[in-house]
Image (tube, rainbow, N blue to C red; front, side):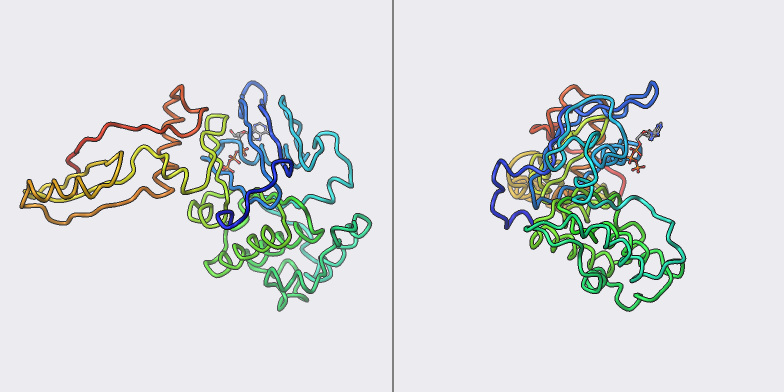
Amino acid sequence: MGAQKAPPPSGDVALDVRDLRMRYGTKDVLTGVSFTAHRGEVLALLGPNGAGKTTTIEILEGFRMRSAGEISVLGEDPAHAGEAWRARLGVVLQSWRDHSRWRVRELLGYLARFYAPYATADVVRPWDVDELMDVVGLTEHARAKVQTLSGGQRRRLDVAIGIVGRPELVFLDEPTAGFDPHARREFHDLVHRLADFENTTVLLTTHDLDEAEKLADRILVLDGGTIVANGSADQLARELTTQAEVRWTSDGRRHVHAVTEGDPTRFVRELVTNDLGVTELEVRRASLEDTYMSLVHRAEADQPDRSAGPALTGPSEQTEEVQS
Ligand SMILES: Nc1ncnc2c1ncn2[C@@H]1O[C@H](COP(=O)(O)OP(=O)(O)OP(=O)(O)O)[C@@H](O)[C@H]1O
């Protein structure tokens, strides 16, 4: 993960997106998206359904023309880049449903050959197919027809197809949808391996906040057409309005108090000193999910500060009575 990595050199930019805009008909979906990714970084793009994550990724992949904005992907504009550039990218779309009669090893071997002319002194292309099947956990299905694979196995194959050319940059659109916990863990190991050992840059979309927290060096939250937060999971949680929530019961009523600054211990000490009837006391730290929900709610409320990233101040501290 990024926390252990040395900071990347500033010139080592794999993705540079400035003021990206996209309009479908009369509907503005992206109204000014800006971010960068350095080589070897793993970025998770989060956002509610319909926020424009797939649209953003498709524009960066060169599959969709943008309405406006400046984009550099591995040093080129995807709207005009050629085959040699495409060979340096890996793409895993939301769902592939073709190649059903091919056998796994045969299909990977066939696709791998297209990348051989794009090998360079620095990057051996393509990936050795047997090694790749081992890496994605498909060795025992090497001879299976694609149509007989389970959903999770099919997704592993999608990932293998996406990385068979040893891409420098991989786009993964909801890569682990349908994975069981074991497959998910293995996939996370694979992404870490790509980033840490191959220096691959990864941009993935997910609705799984736990996954974003485990995988990403940086999390981008897209909502209301712009990036409303950009930072590590820890940074986002620290910048969250509510640092911790204290819940307790007193006189048969449940209470909640948001501690917005400092250590919640002080509040707890005062509480139990002043109220000897306190029971069922809980202190809950803000999770990434809390951060995310707070950001998305703020964007939906269309507050003017949203494009500046997460606010550093939040609601005033107050105690509420809640339903138990
Ligand atoms: N080809 C298209 N023509 C018109 N509108 C489109 C088109 N593709 C997407 N949209 C609209 O653009 C918006 C963003 O869609 P997009 O698929 O990029 O969102 P998303 O964040 O990936 O959503 P999800 O999390 O549901 O996958 C949606 O309102 C969608 O209906």
